[in-house]
Image 1 (cartoon, rainbow, N blue to C red):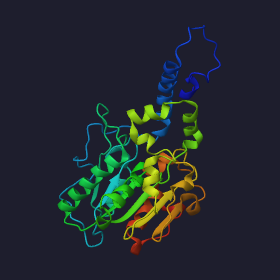
Image 2: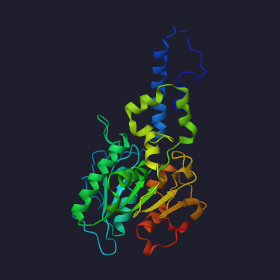
Image 3: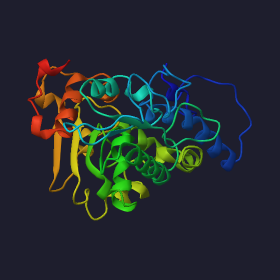
Amino acid sequence: MLPWRHISGLSRTHKPHKPRKSQKSYTLNRSRRLLPALALTVVATAVPTAAEAASSDTVSSGWNNYSCKPSAQHPRPVVLVHGTLGNSVDNWLGFAPYLVKRGYCVFSLDYGQLPLVPFFHGLNKIDKSAEQLSTYVDRVLAATGANKVDMVGHSQGGMMPRYYLKFLGGAPKVNALVGLAPNNHGTTLSGLTKLLDYFPGAGDLIGMVAPGLMDQVAGSDFLKRLNEGGDTVPGVHYTVIATKYDEVATPYRAQFLSGPDVKNVVLQDLCRTDISEHLAIGLTDGLAFHEAVNALDPEHATPTTCESDD
């Protein structure tokens, strides 16, 4: 049974009569019951923890190797930015080796950690996470000697760097930002965020426990500030790669950016039979990987087709 079926007031199962609680207590209890259901769905970007002891300092299958020096063919290191509930290893077990195999220096960070929540990150306030990204980019540039990095992010990781570019002085240090299913204009979570209207105080409670979740809801104060005055900043090349079957960053067209140096791509326009949803586009989809590499190296881009899934 789906978890939200147990939310007080939605279940039709008869229960013995209990003394009525105060309105304040009743609202708090309902909010607490909504929290796990909504959080579990919002953070559906979580992936199985295959490397729980790993950190961003771990050299995994050739990436996060700080002795790597970018080549003439790929002169910029690639920084990978995980999604909500992801981490620097699990989110990139497919794509990082894909890049390393093609000669890129690849790095990934952990961000958005909360106290007493190991391995699952991206839950803190997004502006604070962007500060962590800023520090990490400086570290990568210092280690590699490069002047700029390229970035590829999944879900929140494709949107959060835009705060770094716009407000934290990141634009001169970044050549390209590629978002795999980025929630650039927030999410309705296939309509589930509307439940917040029926549970007074639930949004505030979620915001206290995991503020990064509420920052991603369509219409949040964070997103209003991020998108005010335009989606992009000059000097950065933007690519958005989306899937029609996204069930988390919805509606999927809200992922798209507007600006003079933007390319918005829908996987099904490249291959009608691609059925990847929100997780698969970042974890396993070879077409998304191929199109991302095209964005990183447009001079050597090749058409992305159904046969590009290698």
